[in-house]
Amino acid sequence: MQEAFLALYREYRSGRHVDDPKPWVFRVAHNLAIDRKRRRSPTEPEPDEWWEQHEPAEDSGAALQERIQREEQREHVRRALRALAPRQRECLELRAEGLTYRQIALTLGIAVSSVQNHLARGIQRIREELEK
Image 1 (tube, rainbow, N blue to C red):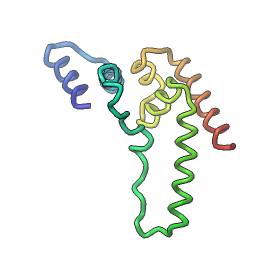
Image 2: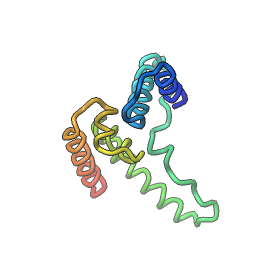
Image 3: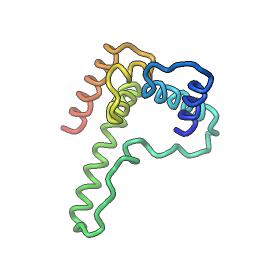
Image 4: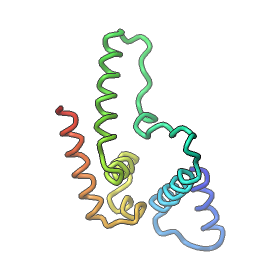
């Protein structure tokens, strides 16, 4: 993210104007992540999944049974999210970050109607997976 914000700073510093900075920064960060993934060696481990980074911290005073049940629920959600198509997952992650459909479309370089379709299909897929 620091690299993306630095790129935004350079844009403004050079006198260029960015109409909507939030999707612009997400787009730059997205492209940087793709570049980094391409450069990563096959033996390098994958970074933590987005949804695992956003899980709430466990309450150390919780009963063992509650912690086990919570972990089972989390694993169920992880499986549902892994079942999504990559573009569906990207759209859902960006929406969870607070971007509007328009901002997601600008970030990913797709039409707003495509964002709507990816989100609708992704949510439906998650529902189906969680009902199993």
